[in-house]
Length: 192
Image 1 (tube, helix red, strand yellow):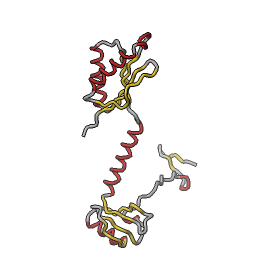
Image 2 (cartoon, rainbow, N blue to C red; image 1 turned 90 degrees about the horizontal axis):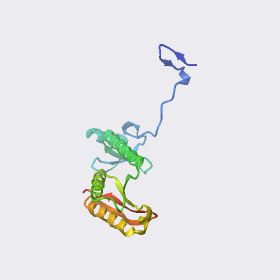
Image 3 (cartoon, rainbow, N blue to C red; image 1 turned 120 degrees about the horizontal axis):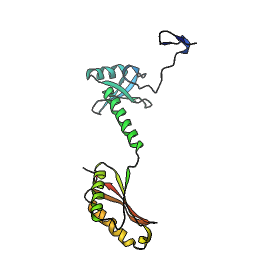
Image 4 (cartoon, helix red, strand yellow; image 1 turned 60 degrees about the horizontal axis):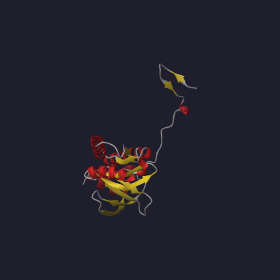
């Protein structure tokens, strides 16, 4: 039974929701081992010692003792700022999830062999902005109707676009003709 008391749920003792239990991190007093191998905050091996001595060393530096390899013989513990370590770990996980959400950022820019010079310049400006934002581009020249017989004009139009974008991107896949489309892929230039 669940009882109500002034808009509050009251659970009987045996029906309370259980707290979520994940893998527990072994930090400071939670380390169950008596003998541990301690690594300093600078990454240097300090040596094998008791848990108490390791905790004392960490406390002197105002840091935490974190067990990084509990299966080792003896278990390996490192002196570090645990809260900063947790923050960096969560930040890395967020970045990894964001990368997985959009695995391959590709935008397609389409023109035809008879696209006017002004329209090509507009498409190039649009492409420069997309490359600056980190998008990959698929540059496509679409051959309409009888234009399929003049594939050389499509290659010329695509090479013009590539030439205009050479300062902002690099060609990943060389231009190829598939059906009625002549296309290539470009990636932004990695900044150092």
